[in-house]
Image (cartoon, rainbow, N blue to C red; front, side):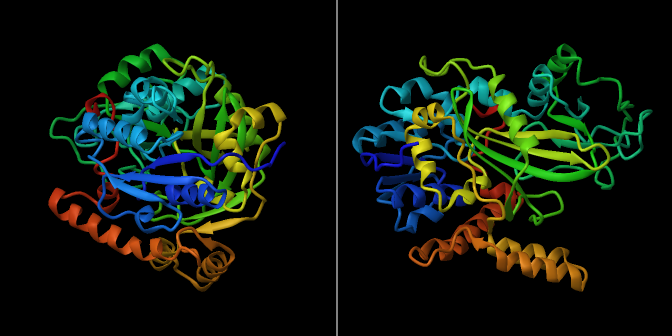
Length: 431
């Protein structure tokens, strides 16, 4: 596999508020490329990074998708961009204008229909079943405000169920079986938790069109996450990692440690080969792009169950901090695919989002041993945002959070929702 320097390219990264965007920017800059960033948020991590040539504020993709696409197209032409690299949920709006944007540069995203299949928590499980891979029992349900069934009561087979919206991020609004968060409907609607099984994909298709929530079998086990870069159905970079610390019991991960997990890697390789590809660039006959999965490895059986898919950059990219070959995988994926090698981070590498890690520790550490494990983890890992030669993004975090808190007040939403309020994608109604 060649590691010779390549001709410097101009990369436009979207979603500059995200730590993953900052990671890509630093990797690209260190390898001699010119990095530009767009954001609809006034404050964002990449805005003040020394790795970025220039950043631009653009219209919010969720509220003004056509103006957003026009702004991207203009910037691509004006700055002679070679690659448009989406990192967050703005990727769905970019995919909406894929045909238009592909005329002016390479765009790292599959089609909108492919993204939707992967992002929709019910349709994703359907695709898993089509691929003949193990899947948790999953079916559509009414919204919690109108559903009086108690999903903490085991069904005939002993299963309890988690409820979640079909479109969500950072595990927001997930209702675990033991949580008392359901609202008793004024007119009770009886729901049986084993009426629809996941193998009945035609039934599920009809149900998912009209339901915004699903119930999914609760599986007791270990959480496993993956992040992969895929070229024409071939995994060319892959990280499997654990996350022992989160913003809440089921929330976003703040600590990432690379592990070796052949079963997860093989699962991803099999799944990406079966992803249906529509309306993608003619030269791409199989899935191309970034893709991430959340799994539960069941304690009692060792079976790896996929829970959800994120067809975009996720925190696994942080584990490639010192691997410059990731840039070759990004900019010259064909050469990596032909070499037959897969870029992986070293086992044991750990990264942390220090500020939310402290919050997680204060909220959930209840005894001396928990504090000791937390402290050891914090000192084992390197911070995702802070870098000695690029310190400004660390302080920008506070401006970003302050701005999100203002959005919380004006929109009456949670902090997690405020951080993605202008970029999140919730299906056809977002278009």
